[in-house]
Length: 286
Image (cartoon, rainbow, N blue to C red):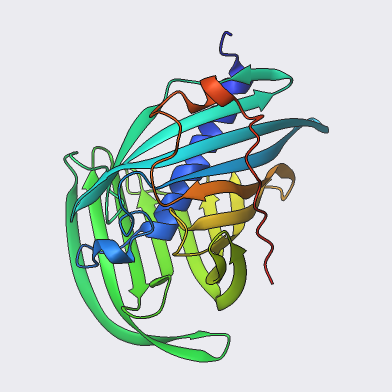
């Protein structure tokens, strides 16, 4: 089936959203070990399947789409991870499944193997107050300089309290020094009982605010370090500069595994599509 502009927009938005959530769940300074990373803590073969229902608004009309993404941990070492990403899109009654592709990410969420200059500076310690709980945190500033862009991130992290990265503030600038986007990630609740296939596990509630040239995107997410990739559900809304809703979406975890899936590597949706008989695990904040 040919790829249409609508499908290209849906796929691009889904992949951008997925990478942003991986970054928020797993972004960390270089000294943090793989056990504190949302994918690095698992063994190769761990996987998750998520479904995102999105409505994009244009001139008063809503254009719905459903995207399913299966992510598999291909390899992991002490510095980075390699993820196999497979996407299936159902938009405007049309179905599209692009070729699977791999994503290489270091533990500080930089593209592994690329020439990116990274400077890490320790800024001291502080305490974060999360629902009345005082949590000692270290603060580090991670500055990355790539081709035509500069990203400065302040990371507040605890070595003992999951999900470890408790606050993250990032500012991206273009070659002219103009701010192109700002992102704030705050853990707003800890140790929230959440149902998983392994039973009830503690989860964290996270608020992500992303300001960019077109407006503001706000995401509320539930993350659990016992689930590959961390994110188990989220709700998202995007407003333009005038405050008008232009997009909203809901992500839910369909299934996941800590060992290799029965299916062969790659081509998951070509074999089973999105109409599989898998049980859907719904994660509702409690």
